[in-house]
Image (cartoon, rainbow, N blue to C red; front, side, top):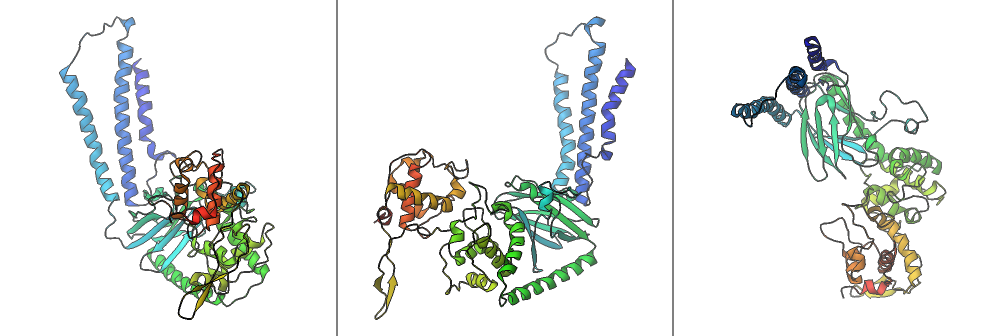
Length: 520
């Protein structure tokens, strides 16, 4: 029986002794900190194994040698001061023994001082932006796994979903400080080989650091659930010897100068529609297809379709503006720093002519530059993604006195009274383009983020309060003011729609005059 007991104890101890060779065990990494973390992990593992062997050994021994069949009689006692002291003091000493090395490691991990290099890491859906402080070098790092592999049309490679177009390049033997932040939601920059895993929070800066010992390519991922393409946000770091890194840095500075010169030259180029469509398709597939889908249909309730949408039917300047600057309160981010004027011109041309849109519009880099600088004298530029008036009644312009002998032509506000059905039809269009991204197509919102509009207090409350929140927004929330981006008629339509859609059925009909006179 003792032999079986010894064999059992050996089986308990063996895994910890060979843990360093286990493929599923934590790796030692390539930095001093990662080595400390590994050693701490192994110390805790050995302590846990020792406790397990001791506790289970006593239990098994007691079960075997103090069983009833051997005539064992259980002791009859209530308390033992010695036992009470023992099982209080011994765990306390064990915890102290674990806390000392853990505290030393944690303090070392949180000390980014005296860094040789500082890099700002910005996460966004779904890419990383790296900016080298004091070096004028910055770039985006985007997943480069072919779409055909993701869709299962081709065999997946060894680094499937762990490869990017531009890796972060770092020198070895230099302390690198990271400043982590985010443009939209919470991300987490994680490279196991460095023992670095730090959240990137919007509006905050977190710090981390590393000092790499060995050259090589090290891979990681975003470790925070950040949206539908969370799994397509890898981290790739290329560690170079110091001399090679310095040469790479000088090369990047020269490439940045060349790109700036090329961008300036592109402003005087005039490309054919076919050239723009070809380049635009490439830009769209690499930059836009993740949200709006390769066929432009988007994801209903999440990302709007680009097929015959108000954005496509609207002005070219408005389309360019939303690509350049994004749209506040939605997932549409700014691409002014990510794409050149030529690339933006190409993708706007592509979107306005692909999937049966066929607007015939051709956008050049100079047009993009004009919108970026505010010089749109020869372009109509209504607010991006603002739907055109569905049924405007022709009105005569009036003259407004603006000086001693100067007058300005002012178009009067359209206060045409519409039927309930007309308001519901137009309201659906306005809701789809301006409200759907937050409150969803069903009006159910996103619990904890954007409130539901189904039977909500704003719907069941006074109409004036509903008008006020649409016109002026709500401070401290994501609800923005629409007074400057929607006409009174559009606001009346969308309020009527919200108060009667999704089973709300309030019966309220709001006219443009109600919105226009609000607060007067």
